[in-house]
Length: 280
Length: 346
Ligand SMILES: Nc1ncnc2c1ncn2[C@@H]1O[C@H](COP(=O)(O)OP(=O)(O)O)[C@@H](O)[C@H]1O
Ligand SMILES: [Mg+2]
Image 1 (cartoon, each protein chain N blue to C red):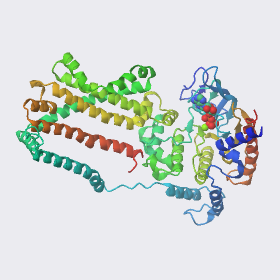
Image 2 (cartoon, chains in turn brown, blue):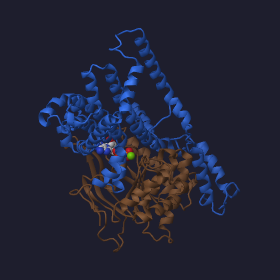
Image 3 (cartoon, each protein chain N blue to C red):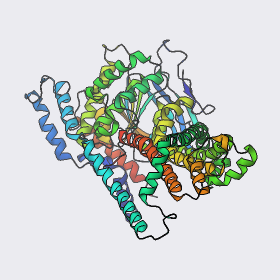
């Protein structure tokens, strides 16, 4: 079991001790987590007592205004930073993380970016090339293996980044506003792609252990379009304001009436949260 | 009260594009029209617009989505066009050649009108003849080789020392605080200043020459690497850590390649400093058993008061310096920058 606690911030064993044992009831457990920045005395409380369980195979969207601490929380789950209080468990090992910026390495080709992730995961050299090609095919970028990052469009870069994240073969995929910088058409297409990949990974046909997604966004419709569960964070400090279960059947479209209706409801709540900050 | 509320309202609109703008549209790109156009197209996925109509499903899975994606990719991919290399070469080579011809012309004129006595200011032809004599004696290439091999060896040693030193300074805070300033200070110290000290330590020997070269080149190489590491986007380091590149693995797979542009600039400067320091050392460290490099050749010309000899030695030093820069460092740098899309065509 992989845990990050106050005593051991940032460091975590990469191989779970009980891998293959009884499946944990969650892919990630965020357990009464708080986070502050700054020196004692002049502290900024960014996250306050957050508890979220992400079930295996679940797709959860974290929704909140900019600056409410979404990225901070995701960094904690990714193990890039340690919580000030509480604990985070990711039984499946180190989660994969995707950023708003593609964060692909410009000194490598698209294929080599993926191969680096494979290599660091311990995939033998002989298998890397084929696996990278397979992952590129998964995001429908078959011909992009030898392409340099700067030769790809924004949407293609994010798909390569997705392939690189999937190359980690983690059971938990963390996504920090990965599509926020894309134009609406491309973003819509990538929503379809992500949904397809997530559903395929959890389908009965796949032999893998499933894929849970913790997806951060400030876009209400995006959250409703993608998630099974939407968690709304308030700002300053970030607390869980409310949760919605989204049981709109897939395939969903961003312009579906059901998506729109729930988005209106969530937006109202979000506006209320934001408005509270202007009243004192 | 009212004013505070409008204030925060505006702020919310600025920071949280969608929620503040309501569910009406995707505010970030202002592309509701485009999106609804897409919507109009999507249910018609049964249309034979795509190669494999997977029309049974109402969503755009399968061939339809693939086709849409392929279209987006094709529309948004940059086409990189390269100039034919011959034309690029002539465009690059002609201006400096013209400049050289101009200098030679002015020189010839000055000689012609005898601005100085001929023994003080020989003509370009005299210098060329002096070079030719040494070529015919068969010694010219030996001189060049002696210096170039010393320079290359000194440079490689500087790389071997400067690289770990630069990494330490860049990544270890106390080391940086302790020797960072000294290292950048050393860069502005002309390495000739080390020659007397080196002679006292090592006498008139190769060791003196290499010591001076190292003291000249190591700081630039280390500083270049430090600058290269400092310029790395933190994003790459974070991305590297999430895929498991930590510690030495991180240095090898993320830090060093990410710092390569700055490191290369440092190497280039390091070579220039090596070459300069070497010439300074060779000018002063002159002993029969040391072998004659270009600096020693220059010094011999001065002793003989042979201006053609002196000028031809200067010319050789210049040509070697420029040649190595042009043949090795410039293409290397261009290649690295181009592969990362950092080279904008002028
Ligand atoms: N390393 C840090 N040091 C100090 N403050 C930070 C740091 N990281 C984030 N913050 C603060 O935490 C708050 C939340 O940031 P962030 O998690 O990036 O928000 P979001 O991703 O929701 O937009 C911001 O006010 C930001 O200034
Ligand atoms: Mg953020």
